[in-house]
Length: 492
Ligand SMILES: *[C@@H]1O[C@H](CO)[C@@H](O)[C@H](O)[C@H]1NC(C)=O
Ligand SMILES: *[C@@H]1O[C@H](CO)[C@@H](O)[C@H](O)[C@H]1NC(C)=O
Ligand SMILES: *[C@@H]1O[C@H](CO)[C@@H](O)[C@H](O)[C@H]1NC(C)=O
Ligand SMILES: *[C@@H]1O[C@H](CO)[C@@H](O)[C@H](O)[C@H]1NC(C)=O
Ligand SMILES: *[C@@H]1O[C@H](CO)[C@@H](O)[C@H](O)[C@H]1NC(C)=O
Ligand SMILES: *[C@@H]1O[C@H](CO)[C@@H](O)[C@H](O)[C@H]1NC(C)=O
Image (cartoon, rainbow, N blue to C red; front, side, top):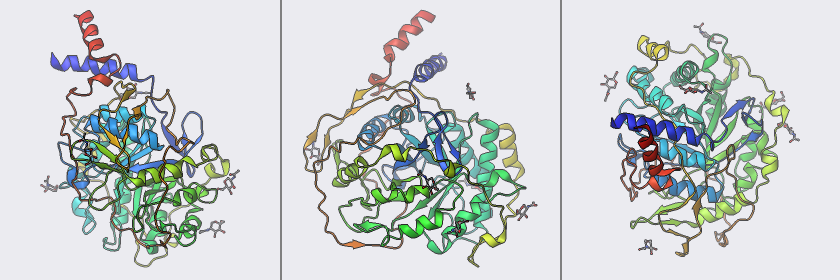
């Protein structure tokens, strides 16, 4: 009985929420575009993993605690964010409410399919040992759990798997994972969800990595990546387009035939961060090569890259970096950022061949590992006992926790707003921040990223709620729980 009630409930919510969903995006040449309007989409994003990697478990991931998601969706809305990236997710958890909050706020999601748990990712030392069905339960499980949400922008098949320590054959294994994911999506999803790779900024193999995944293979067309993320921390403090090396990156990627973006940026060697790179990243030169980027990262953890801090008493403090970033976003020319350009979308991929690769240490052959029978079966028949997610209704509401600015003053006007159908969140032109940025003007341009995507802090004042429980979130359901019972009563 309980089960069927919840099924009716889910069906109802799915019905109601179809009214306010973002429009799925697709890849067109080297741009992301809105699949209905054709407008260009550039990522104004944030990396989202509250509690860091160590805060992740089979029972809790960043999209399983609705109250935290509501709070963060509201704060990101105010900041002007249109995309989050989440690193570690557990397929079996219920993500409906969190995803619906972000969707309602006009925010897309790029999701890594890997997990830090056993068999949850490729082993860069000996990739053949981890290319197994246990690993693909995680990978295909994430696809199943998220494929039905319209605000999934894409999946990352891997994050920084290739670096100086990686075994020579690793690129072929990552490309095989991309192939397997795309074959799975083609068979089991009614929308083509793009699949990409997120690279470490190891400059001497960066372009080889890009070309290895980008080129076309006649005998395995599904194995080419749909987009390329770069984790880059080379702009520190008030650096410049040249001193940061952004000019070189722009040159390097100007001929790319797939969307490229910063999957992490925001060097913190100079504090507070002033985020002057935002104007370069979304400026006229760089937007020919890049589709925006994601700032590392949302919550303050031990490595001190946060924009907000979760306090022990359950309140949240917006750090000065949040205000500084908001000021930068508020200056962006969104009309130009969203305008499409046919020379961006008409690019053609090159065929894979050894002369695309310049480093002697980088794999220059594309004989990908063959798929094991067990993995083939998953692709043919779908994952057994697959998880399923779908949107539920959410409505505009106030945020249930206290929010302080970086001076400790309470901010009371923060609201979560459900946007109109098809609308995407954007920075507001009137930066509300009153802070003036007060960093010293020294600029440094560190050459390689410090920490990347694996923050270890566990500062979380985790509310530890069970995602499946309606507790605490009932007030935000459209029609509410009472509507549900009324309907139930009319059925019975
Ligand atoms: C990881 O995968 C290997 C190979 O399939 C398997 O032997 C091992 O038991 C798995 N570990 C876990 C924790 O599932
Ligand atoms: C997509 O698939 C789901 C079930 O997997 C189905 O309910 C839905 O109607 C499909 N949507 C479209 C647009 O075909
Ligand atoms: C990009 O393409 C142009 C024209 O084909 C070529 O002249 C230029 O060298 C290429 N740039 C890079 C970085 O490959
Ligand atoms: C269109 O894109 C091309 C190549 O990226 C660029 O050279 C050109 O300036 C762009 N045109 C406009 C109007 O932005
Ligand atoms: C909660 O903690 C923050 C930071 O320590 C503090 O500024 C704030 O006053 C506290 N709020 C309450 C209601 O105790
Ligand atoms: C597929 O094509 C690539 C290069 O285009 C080649 O390296 C690889 O050996 C081919 N694989 C098979 C199975 O023919």
